[in-house]
Length: 231
Image 1 (cartoon, one colour):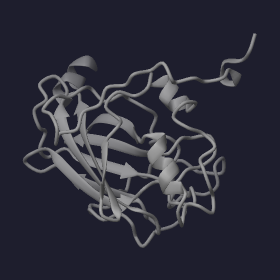
Image 2 (cartoon, rainbow, N blue to C red):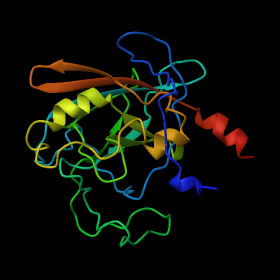
Image 3 (cartoon, rainbow, N blue to C red):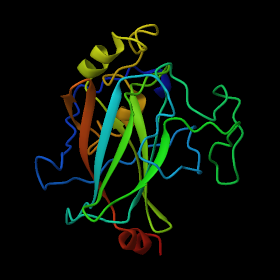
């Protein structure tokens, strides 16, 4: 029998559901996914997270809502982090050589924090980040990591994905073109497979001049619901 990790992955049968708050008031509980090996628990409170990193400008707009009622959750804090056009994460050494903190997160090797940041949701539950379209690295489809806290409680750890046609277009131009197309796609990404296609992880994407704009409703479990589950 084949070992599970060696079995071919085919995500084509999954039909994930996602909503954009600029189109509808509907919502869905965003799929829980791994935070991965590159989360740094020292996010800077800022909107523009580029730190001069080259790439296609990307405005990411997220609305944090209670997945049961679809009501906005003002005051929720949202962290995002992702790799640059060359596939590198800030503050991180080569994969496999990282040190971890006592909480199990990445221990930074320097003060670089490019493409990392935190925003606090406004009265409408919305946060906005100015970043670049993420690059890729071996074994993963293009993605952005996300973590949501309400007060001191973590209520969501998820990832954000994009149609493969968008990635193909972006990666055909500098500075992405030097590296070329991703070696893993949405069709065979292991994280997407484990999340059964990942509900609540696919933003509506539009062109706005030279930049891309993505809007996504992120449904999370209320902190009170999570507290009840953990009793």
